[in-house]
Structures are given as structure tokens and as C-alpha cells.
Length: 322
Image (cartoon, rainbow, N blue to C red; front, side, top):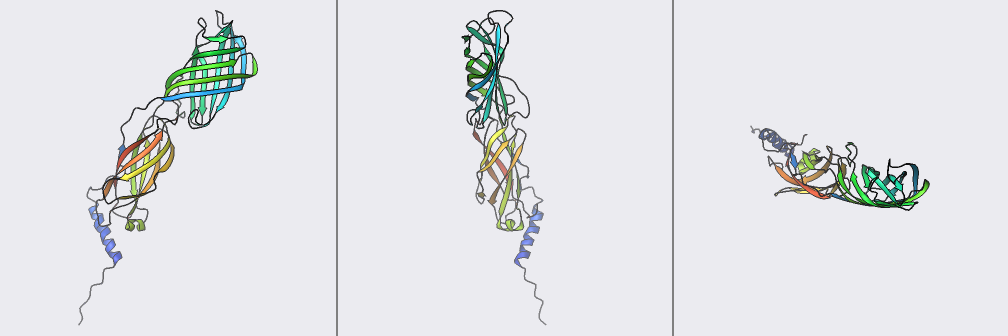
């Protein structure tokens, strides 16, 4: 009588056996948690330079009473606005608006007490400046009966509006102005602003979630890692890019894609980016690696551009199932 022959173990069965072994080994604390966080230390950023010039021939001037005493007995209030090309105030097309209540009299004029206002506005928000040039008793601007000209100083008007990317800004500088202040419409004016503004800055932290995305990727060892780029700083981030997420050590190959454009991330927000890797064989249990994520970002004025490197530990899932 012929003996019974054990059935041949098929390759698929062997793979299942490996998976079952992996499930048992999974109980050991060898892999990094999926939500592991990498964070770079907060760096102090330089103030942003402001160098804005604008002019218009469509200003509106109204007249009213001036200072309670002294030679500046008339107020000539100029209002108007002009478009700013991209690159003048941030990378966006913007608007410069003026509201300047000049006190005039004789051959002198003034903008007392920060009453003058300039607003720099784009799709991200508004930066408002208070302008001062002399006062009712010591005017520092010139007036020839038609035109006001001269210089003064400006400071940022505090703003805490959450949706305004320029909230919390501080700073100051100087300005020069020339304007026709005869009452009426179609008045020509020119404004130049220089100085520095300190904005709330963004800050990067990174979490990760590793997954196979299918049984085929499991056996070809093509691992996908979703990096969630988090903005933990007080300022909004713009121009965000994942420059790279290069693994350290041997046996892991970054497939990409990198770099990847992310866009804007508001303070407290996050955005996902997926990068693929070729990782250790099925038979290797407890595989993990560290990826040095490199994220480029700027602040709301598209200044202070820098790359933050955050190391993130990635645990390779043992099974092909989520």
C-alpha cells in the first residue's frame, strides 16, 4: 500500500504563513506609532521690509474745519486708492488705499496724532498703517495753497482679526507724500512707504501614517507614507512645499514624488502629502526608518522663506491590511 504524500505547500500558502507569524510578532513594541510627531525648534525670523510706492489721479478731497487753534484752520481730507502689481506688497496683486486728513493753513500742513491711514490689502488680509507728520502747533509738511508735500512716520495699527493673515503685525517706518488738496475729484497724489514689519511666523510639525494601499503593494514592498504637515505657529504659512522626505539608513529607497507643492496652511491647520518608498522584505519583522522631511514655507508677505527639516520615524506595517 502506498503511503500518503503530504500536499505541496503553494507559494500563496507560504505567504499566508508569513503573515500569520507577523501578526504574532506584532504584539512586540517594535514599530513606531502611526501618529509620531516630528517638530523643529522655533526660530526667530527677521522683520519683513516694506517698500511700497503708489499714485493715482483719481483722489477725492473734501474740506472742513481744521485745528481748534493755530494757523492750520482748514482740513483737506484726501481719500483714494490704487492697484499694486504682484511683488510690490507680497507676491499677490494688492491695493493701496489712503485716508489723509491734512490740516492746512498759510504755507504749512500736518497729519496730527496718527490720524492718517494707509491700508495695504490683498486676498490674505489688510495691513493698516497710522501716519503722523507734525501736529497743530508744529506742522512739518509744506503747503502752497494747492499742494501738500513732505514726509513723516508710520506705525502698524494693531489688528487681531483671525481671518487676517497680517494680524498681530508690528512695526514702523517713514513715508513721503505729495497731493493736490484742492476740494473736488480727480486729484493727483503720490505715496511712498519704507520701513519694517514683524509678522507672526508659521512653524512646522509633521505626523505620519504608513499604509500599503493594496495587497500588490505589500508584496512588492511599495509603502505609501502620508505626511501631514501641521502649522503649529501663530502665523499663517504660504508657498508651502515638501522639498524632500529622504530616509536615513540602508535598505529603504525613496520613490517620491518630491518635491510637492502644498500651498497655504493657516495657523493651526494641516495638509497631507503622500510619498512612496521601497522598503524591507516581507520576512523582515519590525522594520522602521527615519525620514528627514524638508518643508519650505514663507510668511504672509512671502518673506522669511526657509526650509525646516523635521525627522519623522515611520513604522512599516507588518500586514497588508489597514
